[in-house]
Image (cartoon, rainbow, N blue to C red):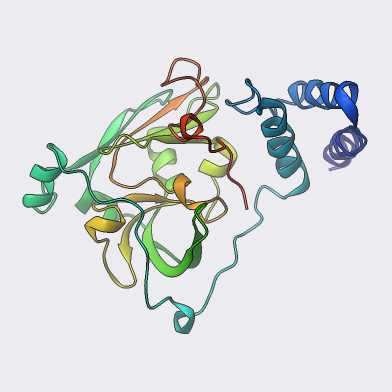
Length: 253
């Protein structure tokens, strides 16, 4: 415990006094020392992304929880950002009620596997009523039911060298989480919404739900998860498809 507190005091002290180019560079080096460099740390905004990520990781507990609401607070309207994929294989799976759909998990795991929707539903369920906040300025509260991502990760056995879980959907809007967020108890693979099956507009057959981050991290239309040590060889190396459109990889709230 004392070691953890000393580490936090050292880093927060270093980051809090960062001012000017020299101070910011020193803070970035401090973040690097403790493995707090995000995949999108390069480029014009990279230093800011690094400081944001490092500060949030240091100042918040790994098990801090997003606020949960009552059923009476569930929103009457749940806005949608983007429609389901129009092409196969998604449309074929949708027409078949997702009977042939499977979620594959591979990469740095001891037991690569794939799971049907029925199999995921047989695992212990996790429910939460949380707010989804969109970077475009709107939000809504909904109940999400699914299986904790941590439960599935335990089944496949994440190897020690893994640092990120990468989520690939049918629509190309892929993203990733560091393992702190991947193991968080509120991070779920959701197959239900407001007491019903997850609707296609909201990501059927399953979507990721990450209530401690902005909505675009809750990837819809999941197809595959891979565990990796680095993001450098995936996409443009920024940890997500979102930074190419000007958004941050880390979207903590």
